[in-house]
Image (cartoon, rainbow, N blue to C red; front, top):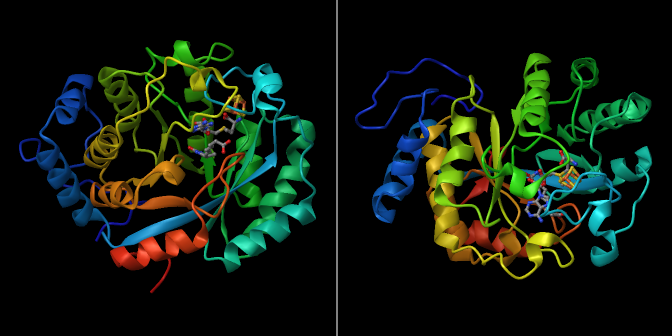
Length: 338
Ligand code: SAM
Ligand code: DTB
Ligand code: SF4
């Protein structure tokens, strides 16, 4: 079986849509996938999933917010923007001390997490914070965990330094389609996001980039977001698909944003799987309000990673006991387990 990180050159088979790794997906082709009957779509995604991955394994990443709140950006979904702080009540904290991060990472490892993902509510990493971040990466890596950081925009020299410190993955989401992006974020551009992803790729760090479903975007926006991801060469190693968590006080929690139909979320996972067969697709934020049945459908449709542990960055995530019970019911085991 090909592993997710091997970008080999498999046979081209555009007709059946199975077995091929393509980087030339068009938005129309992707929109057509979204329009398939649900059963056909999920069957096709599950078939591809089995060609490239063990369908009964799910990778476990755990999150920690190492620097919370006070962010200068205006992402309309985000409780950490300073702009909405009066309404969300989230105040700006300083970067956590190394030892406190390490204690949390040890607990995450003991709980079964395989990758430890650390987030900071920054627009960009500043050089003055780089030494502290390098120390954190080094020490977390030394615990035997895979490391991931999401710190906002990065410059090439910063990406190289993080790689040298032992950073395995960098998360920087495109969030939505280029067309809808301006409805959600006005303080930095879509192109700037792509620049950071290129710097991450150039430094040899695995790319983790995805987006959010349920922000009022249309089907063509979902197709447009996946078009950007599926035409990257190589594909991102990791694609998180988040269901919007409507946090009170953020613009997207206010009236007007309809709650997403969970089956539309499953469709998005399925289309991500079909268009990026080797990528690890993460069923990310939103699991707390999702039924076990919906999560099972996401796994069937090709999701093979989750955020594990009882907190995301500022919002909740299912209890360990709930996830363990779900895994038992489904016969799923962690990716790293024998
Ligand atoms: N500040 C950094 C940045 O934005 O690049 C890193 C942290 S940021 C919170 C990471 C990602 O979390 C966002 O790009 C977004 O996709 C996701 N996210 C944030 N708030 C969310 C919410 N309420 N619901 C779903 N996903 C969310
Ligand atoms: C990603 O795509 N989702 C994670 C992670 N990358 C950093 C963050 C989800 C955040 C959900 C809202 C919160 O907890 O603040
Ligand atoms: Fe800041 Fe990241 Fe939240 Fe945007 S998503 S407001 S950049 S912390």
